[in-house]
Length: 247
Ligand code: PXP
Image 1: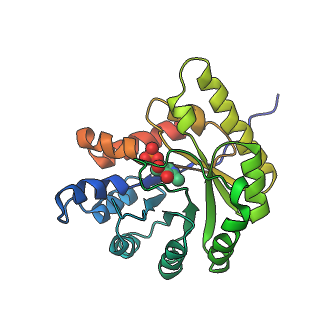
Image 2: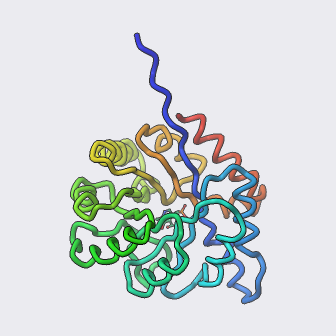
């Protein structure tokens, strides 16, 4: 029997939006997402993820520069494919830009981007970001037609929305997990680096982390919530340990 190939380390991107949500609840400057970014770096996180929403409900424009200056970690900027956001990305030049669907009335990013249904609309934004040397990722549902759309758009990365998996119950959990695993394999076979995120917790992260093709998970809400009880550094270290143990 041949020994199993070692699976490359899975990167952890920590989404610090909700530190800014708490800050903005009182309108001052505490707690500062920059301090969270520094803790991510100390705790072994591999990247900072932040979503600049159209309504600026959490991260604000000036946070981006401060977050980038605070640590040497790569910034993954989540953004809608609008002209305004593309201009901001070109100004700040994050390591990566993850294109997400955005509805003003939603509480969080409720589903994947329908890349298949709007290839022509997305093409200019994707092209401008790629031309500027920004790694483009598309936040999509784990569906073959969305992976194929990412291929047609020339996106080097896709991030699979794991919300359906996270909310599944009973037999549905295995089915949703298989969808993510199959689509991660499809993406990797076609030269696209697959990532995953949304709704991941200590309880549900390990089956996702065990999918060998996945290169990165982006986790936010649960870690920031857990940080209230144990501190952000401990929460990140625990998540990191669970992810590493699953590989
Ligand atoms: N990845 C992307 C593209 C997201 O938009 C989000 C936030 O919705 C996350 C990951 C993190 O999700 P959560 O906050 O549920 O961990």
